[in-house]
Image (cartoon, rainbow, N blue to C red):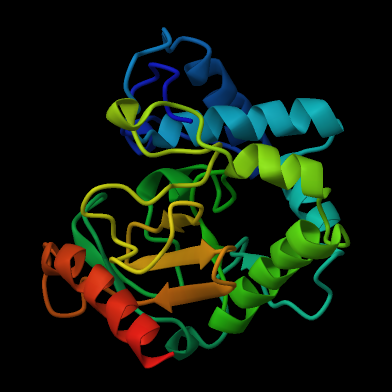
Length: 246
């Protein structure tokens, strides 16, 4: 829930990375073990938190991160989620994004995050490409778990991860999921039981199990601006408009 005290981000990509992505993950593991953490009172979103959780997952399942993903993806055989271990043949199928790291340039069919690029394109905090149908399929499976206990995760487990993990003045987080708070990107119509998450380049989802509604937004907040801050105000307006229409 982002209270580990680990730094929110670090420019690991500036290190001298060598070898296969598995060898690079070992190098990353060595770097993470040098980081210090101390549970803090308030939550601060951290990429380093998710990088650390990737290694926790590998330890629990006794598999590397890619194999962990492939095991999960068997529940969604129709999905086209994939890791870019090599550049795709048709770049035009992917939206370009503006990278604030590694030269400040536009990238296409390549993960925006420079750290993920450095790790070999496979990481637990960024790097996943998917279509809106794919994200929706995943959310529908979570819905099956919650309402019918028939999804890819047990209802009890999902409820645990959806539950608020701190007091409102400490932050608006469950476990992994964001919660609606003051001036939330979800807008004004999502109930307090909703969960969501944002992606740096302009992607997001919000799911309201009480109203049985979810909205997936795959947008590009840098297409007209290299700062993209206007999108912070646009997100809730889009959600409000959709909720009013339905």
